[in-house]
Image 1: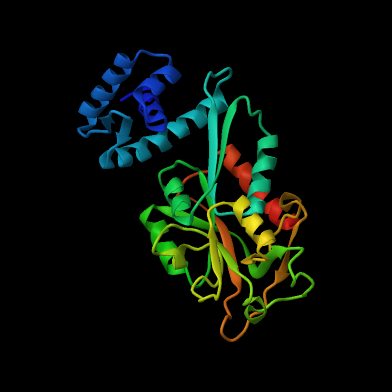
Image 2 (image 1 turned 135 degrees about the vertical axis):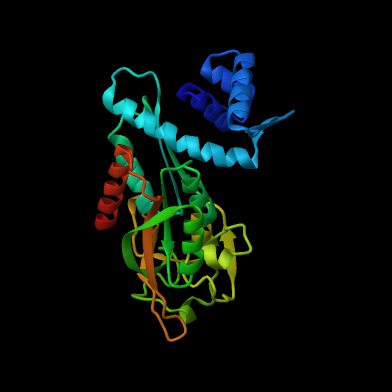
Length: 306
């Protein structure tokens, strides 16, 4: 199997269509179909299933693609370091829970590179997707948090995907709310004070929501709860319904349009666990690309300046 064949196979998987892949690769579709057949015969498994809507990856194909994606990315990294005038575009992507410091770090990283020569991708997504994206090498880095409540489940998922967790910071929990909230003038807030207001959280789309939640105290039974799937909706709910969410103390006011603030969360005997360990995940024993190293450095700067 050649590197060119790997490139063709990965392009098909990303395009989900033989026609679109052929257009991107500037080759005829019959040539591309022939390449797929040759590779499938060589490795002895079907990679794709053809349907009237395009192509889908088989379960065996998913494992194969994860293997060659990492190898091909390493090839592109080496090629970029030792050759000039390459006609390919380097890719760097991350997947993350909803953290403004990670967005700020991505912005600063992008400034160091010519985006005409790179495809930079940032995905704010559910916890399980963060883990799966890095496990399949769809993303080089994932950002999430662990606590005593979710550590066992998250650690198990990381082991299954052969991932490592690297701690960035351990920080106390805070209450995140709009500056117009009735409790915005308080120096600290307890659950009893927050009880009349809706507690907001990001939807995880799983029966294991309590273990995959981005927010602390997910196991607590709140009187009023609302789930959102994206940051923009969350911001509107915070302001429009006097809602709140329990988050880290890392806060980028500029990215929040100066409309929100964080207030320290007051622990009690019933809610003693108020420490969040936020970090990034990578493939076990994998070396970060130059862009990956730049991004980690920018995250550390963003956290320090938050």
